[in-house]
Image (cartoon, rainbow, N blue to C red):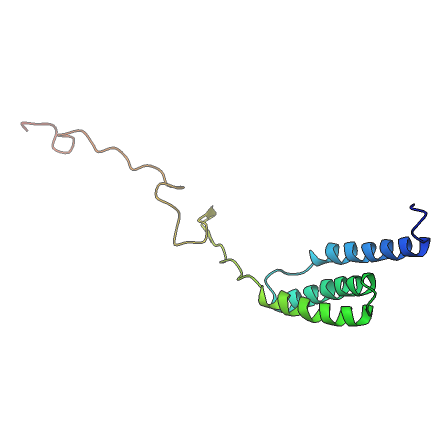
Length: 125
């Protein structure tokens, strides 16, 4: 510990870091394709970050949390990605979500053609 910095400042910084780490860890628990959940997650992360910045700069942590929460919720809702297309299965064979399996996939090759003259007992008959 640095003797020129009071222990209270170290505790405050450690608590702020723990809160920020918890918020970031919980951010992975949301559905990335739901605008509502992304707004809540972004708001929580923004509020925590705003409170930490407000306290660290000597301002009001409450004002920082309000501003950060609003910006985080707006950013989370506006940056929601589009959900991927559903994937379908075709007779137990995976087709990647499109019309059907690719040519030659899960199909036996066609039989070879019969030799010439097979059906009429050979040439000359």
